[in-house]
Length: 290
Ligand SMILES: C[S@@+](CC[C@H](N)C(=O)[O-])C[C@H]1O[C@@H](n2cnc3c(N)ncnc32)[C@H](O)[C@@H]1O
Image (cartoon, rainbow, N blue to C red; front, side, top):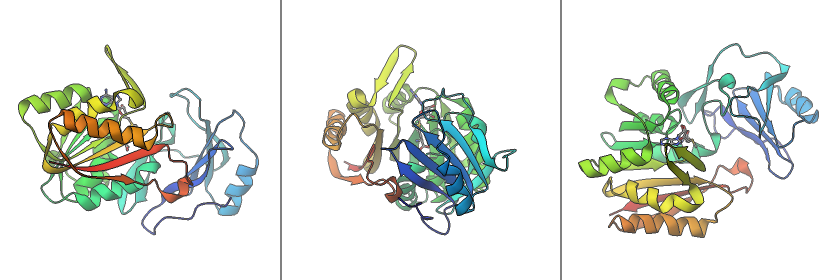
């Protein structure tokens, strides 16, 4: 295996090494490496790879560590504070001390580009399960009016930092803190409509008494979302799971849209970025809904 090369001149963050079989994953953030391992030792060859590639720092975090576990510096210079990276011309704030994830899921790069290329000025785009609002930034850069929805106040604040980094005025956009299922149902009752809706839920979530499992409950989520898509609008559905094949996933999504009394005009499966080397855990469907 070789290191994956920079995807484009205006992208400084990408997965530089992806080997699910060996349990070794390396994300490159503008010269700083974040290494994840399946086991609890860091293979020493990673440090020589980093040196050869001219990396600035190597941080490491076992994949199964608790969400709050901070990565440790293994090589190179310490990163004193958050920094920013570029992806297809958009800027995102990265914080290696944030635990769970440093601020962006790099496997969504091509989906963010699809959103940026599809959203039109004035479109209303709803980003549910938004995390740090990376999809919202992509849509807003295309001129859309975005609504960013997440359970976490911390992530909504991070979203506004990402907006500021890109010169976007947050007063032109909306943030909703709370449960996506409840908000989608409320928007549906209110007759609110969006030209585009992004669904990227965690594989498993529990909020109050409700649990959600991607491989079991996606149809219900797709139904709630389809109710708020304007006729002819789009729905981007993502599922991060090895437990469900694409055919099953597609069936759940289509069933959900139809339960909302809506018709699927078109449906495309979107590939993961090529550096993920055929590990197709992230399933993405782009639907146009009538
Ligand atoms: C997989 S991450 C989303 C990643 C994001 N779409 C991106 O590409 O950057 C899941 C997010 O969903 C949020 N979340 C989990 N359960 C939720 C719920 N019931 N309602 C709203 N947000 C939820 C979490 O706080 C987390 O930010």
